[in-house]
Length: 347
Image 1 (cartoon, rainbow, N blue to C red):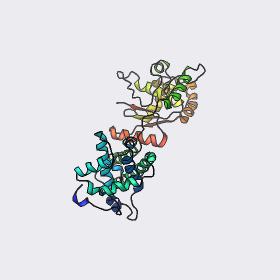
Image 2: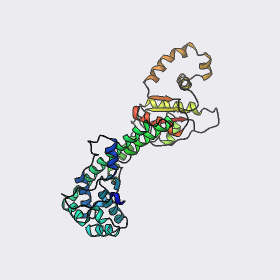
Image 3: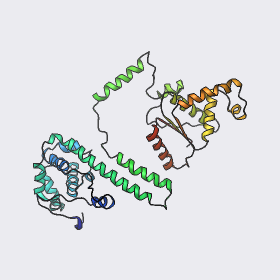
Image 4: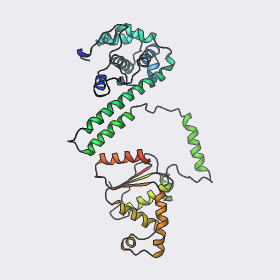
């Protein structure tokens, strides 16, 4: 902390506001103060000083930057450093550490540490206090993200795709910061797991796979269906039917009501739909391309169109090939229609 941002105050003085607030006030409505809750911040810090086990409950939830006030940031950062060194945390050890690092006067001295401890209602509510602090921090990050996106909109020199990617990264970085998943006791997983195993062993059960069935029984028996977060690579020599197989799987997945995205870097969307027609009609693609379908085959096209029209298959053949653009397309599809299964043709 530089001398310009150094403030010393007594027990009746308000804590030093962090200097990010000045950016908010300059770029946003000057009448609005960034979201924060001083009582929650002080209660978190005071609870940690009162109860040695409190830090364990919030260390993986809060970071120093989640605190709005600079002195609270410094106090919590010092607490984390003591915790990492396995030094017991109380007013004495914390004030000693802050004094040794020339921070004690900056944060308000022992008087302010004592004030925080005295204002704690109950240490048993520290997780709830921490949630409030995290929520306010996330709101401030959203404000900052919105300001960054606004600034991007005025940059007419950059490539538009890169600007959109930067904007999406800014928003998604905020969503990742809020309350990550924690350890779950095995008892909370047992019932769900047993129910799934029981369903798989039920002779009358329709669903025999843990994942989404591909429609190819031999493949499903090996994979137990397509599992969430799986990355599968379909590899073969040229003209061996990779795209046709992928489209068949896409069609079968869509029949289960799942949302399927197809990003094609090789074929047009019209060509892909023609291949779907061929698969459903069980005819050679050459007949489709040369107009040699039988009257019976042609008559079935109407019902096939109805079937495809009801499916949740989304095709995009406009991707330029960059990873950033591909990722942006997938995110947009996920947000607008959901995305259970994504095919990229080809790597």
